[in-house]
Amino acid sequence: MAFADNNDLLNLNSSIFEHEVQDWTAELTRAENDILRKIQAEWYNKRYNNDNWDPLNLVEAQWTQATMYRAIGYYIMPRLTQWRTDSDAFQEQMEFYQARFAEEMSDQFAIGIQYDYNEDTVIDESEEYYNQQDRLWR
Amino acid sequence: MAVTDSTREKIAVNIVDTLKQTITDDTRPFTIKKVVREPVIINDLAATSMPLVFVQSANETREDTTMGGSAITRMGTIDFVLHIYIKSGSRDTDRNTLLEIIDTALEADRTRGSNALDTQVIDIALITTGESAPYASLAITVQCEYCFTKGTS
Image (cartoon, helix red, strand yellow):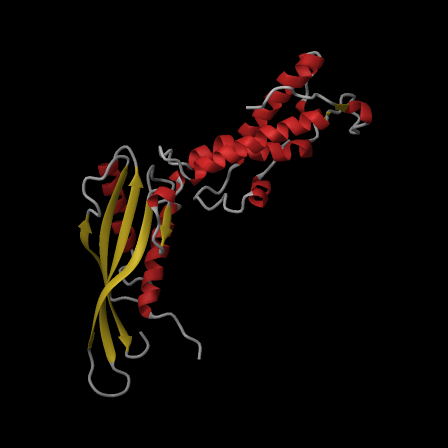
């Protein structure tokens, strides 16, 4: 499973491959793992027995946007920036995408996490779990 | 009438292509990451784009080598300045490593794809002395001799 790939990144940020790195799969994988951990910790484990947690029951497309924001904001831009004390374009993008990630996660939790609990490959209404957050994502 | 690239331009393109080929050499732990022909602002570069080489066509002298007739052959001696920019914790060593990579790559074909008579690295100079860490730069002057027919340089 993969929530997002290099093509998704290219569609979001057309200059992402202009910095002598041709593959951001490792960063996308780390971002995806972060998101899975957050979904499990913030929602699933509070609702169910965590022994039954299966990330394959999530709907990949629901987390594509968040995965891209997480990857760019937390892993890709930190690799590109020169960490100048007076900031640079990459540090500014880092802040921008981190904010988008926080928004996206809050939105997805609010509109309902789609989880195929009975594993019939169909998400019915009872499998959309609303989990309004009162906290800010960071 | 279509305008074709001059020999001067073909040599410049060959130098850039030759240096770009070294990027894919993953047998070295340290090598060139990017080759450009437009000036760059180092502070705006991604950390992943360095070491970077900026190739600039520079001074040239020309003289006739034949007399009379409409198709006079001329000889040109042109300098290309390769500006190297490095961000590293071992700047002096890395600078020397890059110099060796560039010199070796250019020596592999001194004719620059049959466009030049000869290619030589003739000068190596610090661009800025006393640079602050972690940056370092170097200017390598590469001189090429070539012949062309008057009016078709």
